[in-house]
Image (cartoon, rainbow, N blue to C red; front, side, top):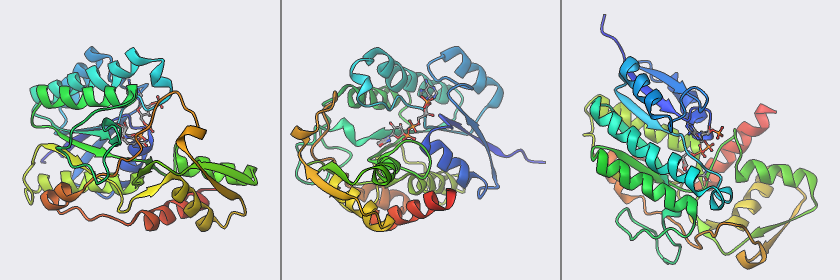
Length: 295
Ligand SMILES: NC(=O)c1ccc[n+]([C@@H]2O[C@H](COP(=O)([O-])OP(=O)(O)OC[C@H]3O[C@@H](n4cnc5c(N)ncnc54)[C@H](OP(=O)(O)O)[C@@H]3O)[C@@H](O)[C@H]2O)c1
């Protein structure tokens, strides 16, 4: 009997990892192995090598990342180890094993000074440690394994895990009034939509319907909004009586600077892999329904 090709998912306990897990049952032709940080810390390189020697995966999706944007300002070495060096080593190990590597990166590789959407070839210029560490990971992956696919995404949320949508719902249950930043523009991304896109890319390339086309790709939901708009939509969908007040970035100080504009142009991923984009508000409503059903 022919053995199924294996897909290794690192960082399997994060929000994207969990969404991938939900989709994995639909892909019966492939075998999935999800590993949490505890099971496979990607910065322990010998452990990673041993896993690859035993598992011999056909694909590796790296969802493992240091994602604490503000904490990264004071934990630079750790952020660079996990988001930079470990990504390079993982990419290189994938190359040695002929494993197709998909890595996830971020809109925070940009400085936010643009006034129109960033393409994959727009100049990168991160303004915080997290963004710099993610850019280092992109660079190392592409240098050590030019066959990699890197998907940059933005404002990721899901029904599970720690994210803006779940935080807002909680705050709206606790407070009459919430202040939200109105001068940072971006595009939210439902992690379920990103998970579906990753699976479609792997599935279609596996069936040789599309060619595996390495490089950087942008992906988010469709639409450009502020965090304030995002919060207002959450209020509207959940019928919350809380009042949402717009404030400026200057009025909401954080250890890490955020880009003022980080909308991504998604033409390349649509044209290369036939990816369909969902409207941000429709996807938000689907996620909120899932959160409410999970209660
Ligand atoms: N969240 C966003 O808004 C956003 C936006 C753009 C791009 N992205 C990118 O999208 C990807 C997925 O993000 P996410 O929101 O799913 O992040 P997440 O929920 O924080 O998941 C990341 C996972 O990686 C794990 N991890 C941390 N260090 C690790 C290590 N050394 N080895 C193995 N696993 C490790 C984390 O475990 P612990 O939680 O136990 O540390 C967590 O389970 C990341 O590459 C992120 O940079 C995220």
